[in-house]
Length: 169
Image 1 (cartoon, helix red, strand yellow):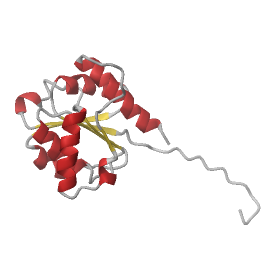
Image 2: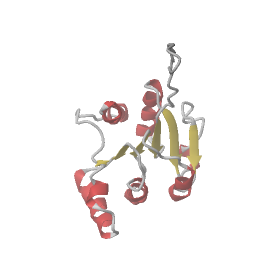
Image 3: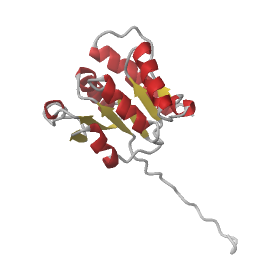
Image 4: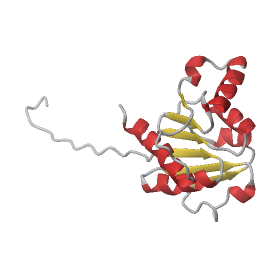
């Protein structure tokens, strides 16, 4: 200080919890929502089927949207603390969501599916003008390879990969 005195300042950062956006309301989403909440994520579940996107089905979710996936996109506030998981009920839905997701600043984008399915979707998106660099951000097949078989094991695999990305510099 100019007067020669000392000043002690304490700074306490107020950090928001990251948000896990789960596109799809099936069995994997159920397990992922419960586990994601346990490890500190805000949870948003989106499904175009009202019977799969409800507070009764997902009591841990902070936000639930039961509408066409494309109508939900403007409602999302995706930033660098956002994690997008695509586990919808159809390839065409996965492709629509992925096309939108790669244009966001999300820290993580993952899509479920076989290597063949994912390659087909990537080929379609490349033909639409999505760059290889954008697609290079996508974790597909999603999750760490742990030989998961049940929806709960698959959710563990996905969440482990999400946490790995979250904690990496």
